[in-house]
Length: 352
Image: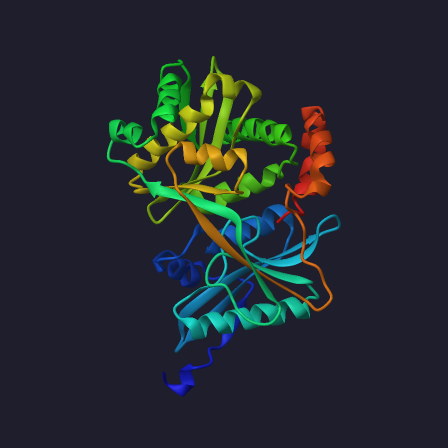
């Protein structure tokens, strides 16, 4: 390598150039929606957490990017995160030189901003002093979308396939859209779903901001029974992959098998959009969500995260499986939905 190229200048772009960095992300094989300027801009708009993009350049051409969200919470502490409110992110670069330049610049920024920790979700995991790796905390689930509905059903293991067939014959309806009624139905269902799990709901502004930022690359699919929304999911579409991101169902959904219809209908919808892969998102091992995705025939693949903490500092702890949160989760599950929806967004805004 030419010595002049060994050290890349890294620019902090507060006013992110979508054409410059967005095109780079979409062209990169490991690029995700969470690397896009649209994502960090939406997060900043909806939560107030400042976002920035580190850009490594070589000869005036982008050679790597690292989107960062400055998450600050009274309850959960501070961290510089790539990427905020996302299951992925981390360094996206052409080579090891660009990777190292971005990581060094991110840590300098974390120290300058007095953030106790820097969290990188996915991508190449930095080695060296201060870095710890989490390799078994989460697993991802991705598999191809089949050519037609019959092949898609056959790809589902027998027991789960029977549940999908029952859902298809249950008389429920499916709609897909991006309008006000779609957003209203989605939030009502999602808010009830996370309350039932004992988790505070995100602000409405977050979903609206993501829909607005991603345009036609995001939509909402809703399942209704007798006109009532019982399951709904907001999905992202990136480079031929469909990603159901924020989804859930009401208490009634399980009995109706509405989630089975929702995900099968989303696979069908994604196929009509030209998608070839379905990313079922991440789940923690030994949880119900992890088992559910395996039941659909998806093979879990470990996800790698990296965290660096300042000397003497402790990393943030936002894992809902931590025993210290169990009593709070049980109490939250008992809250009236209206109260959970009022109290939840200010808390969830700090999870990042």
